[in-house]
Image (cartoon, rainbow, N blue to C red; front, side):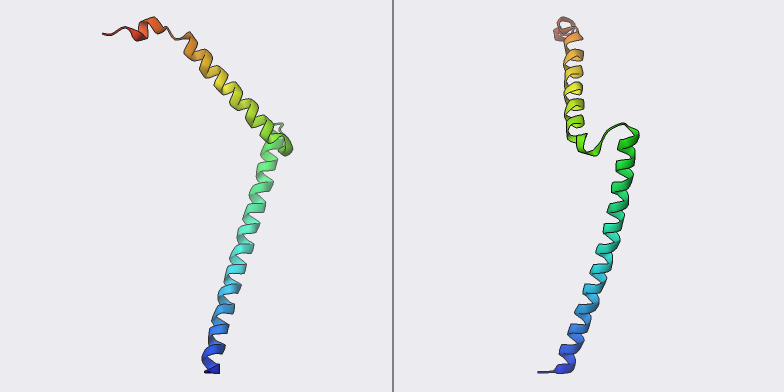
Length: 83
């Protein structure tokens, strides 16, 4: 066994692992900052993070209802006539 080669390989792998760790830590910090900013924006909008799913569902239902109402108001007889 070539101990020097094995030692160099271990050293390189350790450096790669350190690099990955630092990048992961930096990414984690970015995500934490984003989370803080999103929570701040939600509070400004008057929505609690724990109520977000309910709020999204309610807004989706309201959008669907408004699309339905808009389609109902379109004059179907005029749209179905051919030019």
